[in-house]
Length: 298
Image: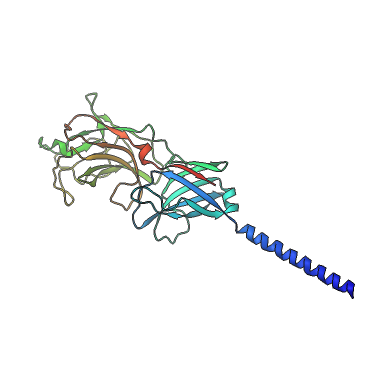
């Protein structure tokens, strides 16, 4: 009788130990770890968009969560709980912009930055192959004020063309790297706080893709730019003197449903209020203050 009791108790203990092991295995499989994000220069998005982080595990993206950014540039969240096993196996981090709400579990085509893990850290920038895959630190640009599409010589400060005439002849004014598929450049003039496009382009030594505000007296030069002399959008009146406005070159997703500049603005310049026509002016490289960069740590 005693032997039977002993064997029964041993069997119960074995079963209990096995159950405990299974419970511990289940708990271990659901253990999470924190992904810490420290990325600067993230702009505020519209109400229908969110940032979303992703880790790449065995070649596939796994979401680390979404977040927004305030008007002051502060992310709503900088620490994200991720399955520990996935985080340990992650080779890369990718940051995308997603629609909100978003019914698609996959990343969108708008991937703005990324980085490869070296140990537990990844340096995140637009240079990553999944993003712009280019170095914009040496980007530069020049422009002139002129209205070559009109014969009226009194409106010369009503147009901007991204070219260089310092040699006496029109030459390419923009030094920008080639963009990957899905991205294009776009010129802007920010007039009285309102951005007005000068046209989208992929080649710096060719005319851009549109001329909605230019005149009809002559063709513009074979470089990106625009005359603001017709079809003024409300509340503007054309022709208009753009001295004192801001000139911008942005990088836009293609296709793009936003009428305003995207968060990537590599070249910017405040046009002097005393700017003269047919004088070459420089654009300023704004990569350090406009492009997302930082680190993520697992």
